[in-house]
Image (cartoon, rainbow, N blue to C red; front, top):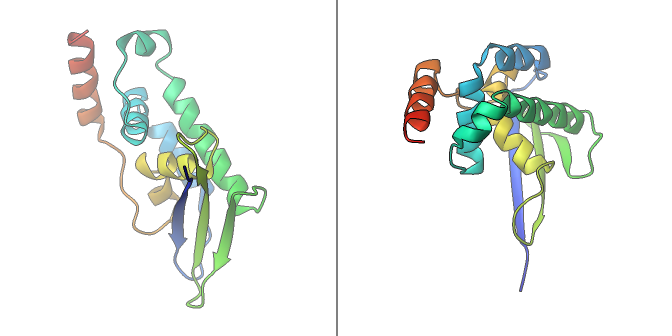
Amino acid sequence: MGADLILSSLELAPGTEPDWEAAEKHLADLTDAQCCFDYLEVEQGDFDPAAWRESPGKWRAELAESLDNLVSAYAGHRRDAVAIELHGGGTLLVGGELSWGDLPDESFVNAASRFSACGMAKAAGFLGCSNAITKEEAEKLLKEGLENE
């Protein structure tokens, strides 16, 4: 039996710093449905109508925690991540851990994946990151999920 090394990284262009305020604004502008489905995409989870009805804002809170974890990692306050200055002048924020199975929720790898999937990484200025699911797509998935309950 062995463990796997799992790494995640985010890159900044030379001469730039993360724009954490833009990431916060991006998260604030997302609908609860967008937060839910972006989170579930990373976690590879299924939509749960009962959980949605109980707390539609719970996924936003999870994504906000991911933002806090990335800010802390970039500032050097985490043992599982480091910001590396590259020879070309850019910065690589990289972290990881050994996995004997599922990663803990507070892991850098999970936080970076969630941060990137919902579009906060792109908003903060990290390179090669995707946008969040659109409001229209999220609303369609929410409607389908609630109808199929």
